[in-house]
Image (cartoon, rainbow, N blue to C red; front, side, top):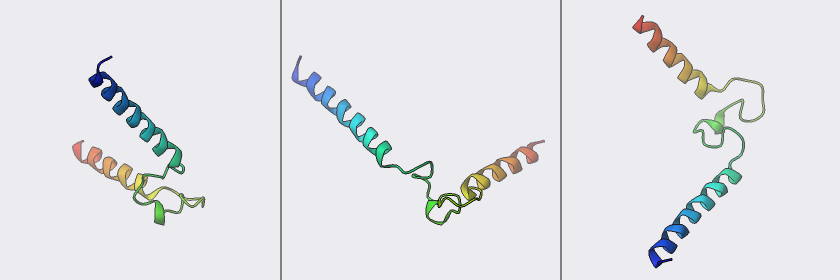
Length: 67
């Protein structure tokens, strides 16, 4: 194996390790959501995800305007 091969393999292993670390540190489904700090469903309370509701309502509005 040449030094370039070793460097490429090391970079790939490092990227995989960082991805696994990120998955291990994430807490639930809302980990990467920007609205998780003020979301009722994130805290374990019963409620709907406001971020998902806004996305769905926006898409429904676009679909109804195209008809």
